[in-house]
Amino acid sequence: MSDTETRDFIRQIIHDDLESGKHAEIVTRFPPEPNGYLHIGHVMSICLNFGVAAETAGRSYLRFDDTNPGKESAEYVEAIERDVRWLGFDWQDRLTHASDYFEQLYAAAISLVEKGAAYVDSLSADEIREYRGTLTEPGRNSPYRDRSVEENLQLLTRMRAGEFADGEQILRAKIDMASPNMNLRDPALYRIRHVQHQHTGDAWSIYPMYDFAHTLSDAFEGITHSLCTLEFEDHRPLYEWFLEQLEPVSRPRQIEFSRLNLAYAVTSKRKLNALVEEGIVEGWNDPRMPTIAGMRRRGYPAAALRDFVSRAGVTKKDKLIEMGVLENCVRESLGDESERRMAVLRPLKVVLTNYPQDKVELMQAMNHPGRPELGTRELPFSRELWIEQDDFMEDAPRKFFRLKPGGEVRLRFGYIIRCDEVIKDDAGDVIELRCSYDEDTRSGSGSSDRKVKGTIHWVSCAHAIDADVRLYDRLFSEANPNAADDLHSVLNENSLEVVVAKLEPSLSTQEAGEPVQFERLGYFCGDSETHAGSTPVFNRIVTLRDSWAKLEKQAMQQQG
RNA sequence: UGGGGCGUAGCCAAGCGGUAAGGCAUCGGGUUUUGAUCCCGUGUACCGCAGGUUCGAAUCCUGCCGCCCCAGCCA
Image 1 (cartoon, protein in one colour):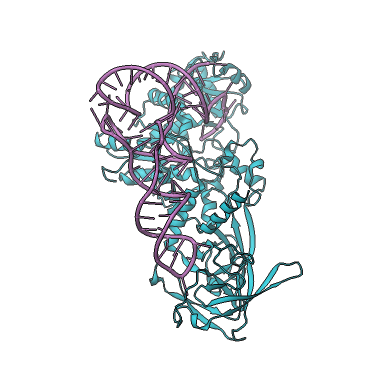
Image 2 (tube, chains in turn brown, purple):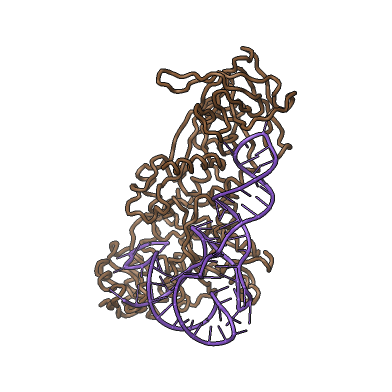
């Protein structure tokens, strides 16, 4: 980054700290709790933490904040590692756990007790809540607040030894029950939990709380800048209190930035978990989920995600970013990369009445219009073809320049055809078009340079392969589902539609996860969970921009 | 009614006392055998409001308004 480029406020601080010599090296960390899958909000934090370290030739840790066993699991640990790596970041040998420091944390707790800055409270959870006061009223001291150091030490030792039941005792910091900042009203440091821990097994029966464990883990690792989201802003005084009391060699600085919210999506592990648990989606990696796993399966490139969060920026202002920005990043990333193919999602049969019955021609099709070096492939062309239902209109408005009765259209990489006859079933639905082709208009080698306004895609009936294609839409009908009282009330009922599509034969070898553009439709990729050569299943990653659809929509609105 | 934050165009976001960058969206137009891409062009932002300081304020001061977060033995 050059000096003239604008920096976000965090990078500005870091830059200044490097310039002033306050720090010789920048050390950051991404500290997820393994209690769910990572989502788009985490992408922002990952890119910030790993990005800042990379830009300054510093270091970054991937640290599991695993202080609440019971909610955490190895499945989540593995998923998180996979997701961060896929996003393009490397923690090298710096994979740690808050639980790696349990012994040191315990020693720190002892020293807090010894200096009279922490005590064991025997109040119940309910009583503690009552003693805490409210936002406008101060709390009251616990009757156990002034126990002797000896008694506290003995109690804490017995807590660790597992002599008490869950909830019977708790270690608290002795700060100020009257503080206007609730976090300073003697916050809990250690609670008793007789449960298996995903990483430490049954070694402990007491577990440290977030504020205590997180602050010290940062200090132990020599983190210079501890970057977190805004809701931890009023935890900062507590963060600093720990550092002052315990005087670790390293004194990290906590800086908060605002979370990234995506319109029409939820970004709370609790809500995402509910969608999974209730079976509203297939799982954490459902392609409609704003999880990294979901977006990967959907086909979003990691580069698009990184680009997206960089466009969002790092500030302290609450943000709700339009889905279109993300989609645009995806299109931009895929546009240059993806080869083009032909597929018909909603087939309508076209019979070329003047085309020989058994003739098959092989048309040369460019794999990418802007990148000839990607070569060409052959598309079989024959008398009977599938075209898109949307590409034919019986009563077409003047600006509709696809196929209509008596009208002409170009078949992409093929001939210009004219619609001579419309065949309907008993219900009056169009089931087939009788057309004639102009032999002189063959793509490329054609002797005619006639122009027609429209070009449509097609697939030869005899050569087409069938495939399930999943068309995804936003999961919610409200821009800010986070604000809804009940998630169910804002679900988009049409977030998934499955169609049986007709694909050009070359798609039979398409590998799962490899993105491709179906011309005029959008970007698609074989579903990583279900796609196979014999039973192809494609996910629609994102549609192409469609100015015709936009016009139609406007026309509809004008009509009311 | 306690404390902590935030308020610049539809959505993001620069700006750090000298007279409002940029991106996305929008709307025009050009190219095009993807109505895609690409290329041009397109915004009077009462800088939340009201006062004040100053030759000069989005930037400094005061008051007000609006929104977000905090009363887990969650993170």
